[in-house]
Length: 80
Image (cartoon, rainbow, N blue to C red; front, side, top):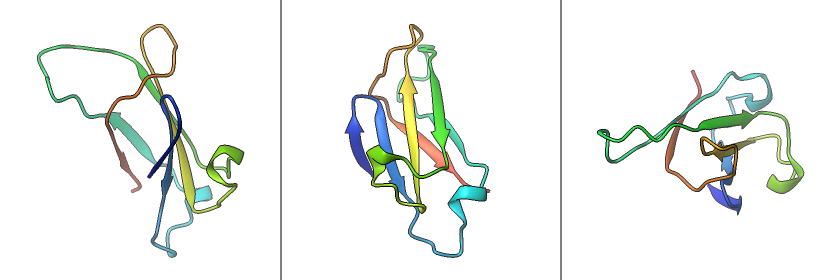
């Protein structure tokens, strides 16, 4: 995983048998302090993104806070 910018990440999927572009990935925040609800949203892009080198095996994950601003926060990604 690389950080393309604030709240903007490129997650390379190294398993060639997974077709990233036709996958339906799920991303959730990983909050260390589960007693504090922080809100926000994650957007996962499966199409090649210029900020991620236009790599078809790379997901772009963008994290937002409750005000819609990019935010650096830990997250999990799963590809069923």
